[in-house]
Image (cartoon, rainbow, N blue to C red):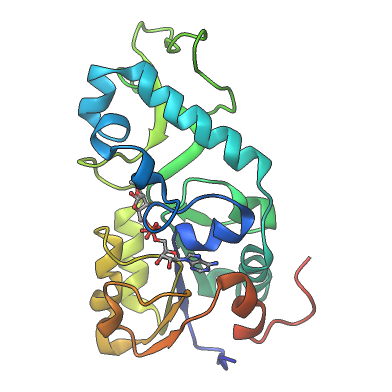
Length: 238
Ligand code: OAD
């Protein structure tokens, strides 16, 4: 178990692995999404220009899977930790599902966007909540301005969200914990190296990540099994 002091500031980075035990497929590895879909056909600005209907088919499928999933003990443990640490915990996720929020986490930085939000690809209308499925025969939705409505997702070749805040918080954390991320996708893969020697660095997940050498401690276990015991949580997660 990690002992936390009053002065600790904890940065948690989560990846697809934290939602694996909830039944949401990861991207790489056996059964991973990128084994069955080509990134350049469904998750890039070029894909959107070439075939927006195919892109929406992919994200509609992911909306359906995520809507049927429930938070697991790892999401619940992080929500409990937030209630204890308040703003001394910063939760940054590469995941676009909403399982952290549904577990009770209030402040989540979704650096790769949010599956249940959409935005216009043309005008500046802010992203809006959207749980609908757009797959044949439903056409690609249109904005009032005439532009197309796209998923509020950071595609390959686009800039992730909230990076200014994320880099600022990384500078001041004393504990950095990455959970369920393969450590191959930038910029998240380099967060641990940015933190460097200044903080205690911990990885949680059943397999070694690609950036393993940057972590001082590694717990090679499933997130749902270890997280409820990793932090000194007062009371049980609800
Ligand atoms: P990956 O699919 O690359 O890696 C998932 C990681 O989760 C692997 O290292 C697994 O070992 C681990 N894992 C599997 N089951 C687990 C469990 N029960 N508990 C903990 N860990 C487990 O997913 P990410 O690293 O999140 O980006 O991928 C990063 C980005 O690549 C995604 O956000 C997505 C993708 O392309 C975009 O779509 C922009």
